[in-house]
Image (cartoon, rainbow, N blue to C red):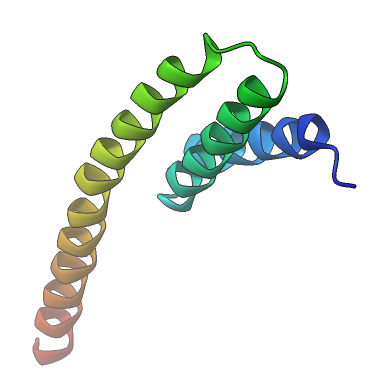
Length: 88
């Protein structure tokens, strides 16, 4: 059987590293981790974990939606700069 606590520990570290490197994938992993923490809370009857992590999931989705357009804007700007440089 999977040990959800060890999986959650690994996902916490991984998501923190990815977000620290400004990679949007970290927000997805953090959301998955919050779902696992909700499951742990329900299995152990520690229901206080559930609402806090549901709020975190909403915040992660909001942050992800804010970060994704920035990535596309920057890549589009980089493409325009590249095209301008090639034509010069």
